[in-house]
Structure formats: structure tokens, C-alpha cells
Length: 190
Image (cartoon, rainbow, N blue to C red; front, side):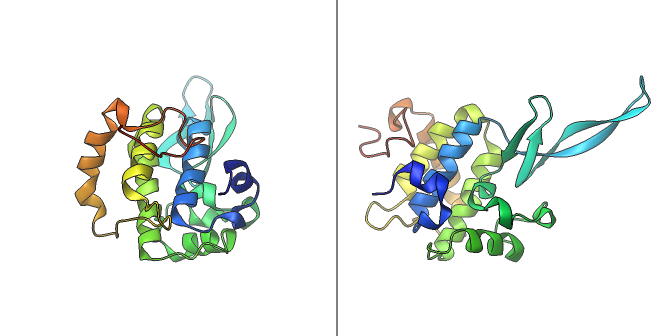
């Protein structure tokens, strides 16, 4: 089994949906902030434009307060040398975004369910606060990643149906391992 450190160094080590999800989860949990676009706002006191964080999520962003570079869920699957700022504002399943992900993860045989997983991971980044990511990703891994082949169990048409069930499951604190994703979910909820 791969280690998270191997996946962190080389995205070509990712070969299935579960590995991709755990790579995203580990890095988002470590980052502990959403990736937001930068914007300019006019400061009436000084007469200058100041840089602020926009409300829109970004594949690559920067937290203005901490000067920390950030990535969204899908951004963690795009190698820095393959990132193109023109993908900002495009969905996780846009051809340009997928080309960058595909080129960054050449050994991952993506399926339609992989695309659903990418959309789902992006929804976690965009729709949940960072303090909730560990629980939500842990429950997602446990409930929606096949232990047999590491594939995502849903297609894109099924995602909306299970979101409410996932939210309920994540609220049950016993349904996740507090050291996720460093220790993959094995017996969550038991």
C-alpha cells in the first residue's frame, strides 16, 4: 500500500480514486483554509487598491492575512508546472481542468465515477468549513470508496442524493478515525 508521503512527492503514484481522495484530504486538512481568489478593493482612507480574498474558490490562491499559498481540492491534483491560471472559474470537470489533472496523474485510470469523486471532493472544499473537513473526508472515504479496488462508488447523477446522508453520518463523531487520513479508515463507526 502507498504511503501518503509517496503520494505527496509524486502524483504519478496515484492509481485509483481512493488514493486521489486521500491525497486531497491530507493536503486540505494540513492547509486548514479554503483556497480563494484574490481581488482588489478600493481603500477610501488611503486612496489605494488593496488586495483581499474574494468569496470565489480558486484552484490556486493565497490567503491575504497569512501570505500562505493555497490550493483547492482539485488543485492538489495538479502539478505546479502544469497549472494554468486560465482554469480559474472553470468547473472540476471542465476539459482544461481535467487535462491538467490527467497530465499530473498519468497512472490513474479515471472513470466516470472518478469524475464524480473529483466533483464531490470539490464540493467538500467549497461547501464545508476547514474545521469539518477531516470528518467529512473520513466518512466519504469509508462510505464511498470501495475497499476492493479503491474506486468511488457513485456516479455524478447520484452525488446529490447522498449528500444529506453524508452530512448526517459526519455529525456522528464515532464514524471517523481522528487520525484520518494518516491512518486510513478501516473500522469507522465501530
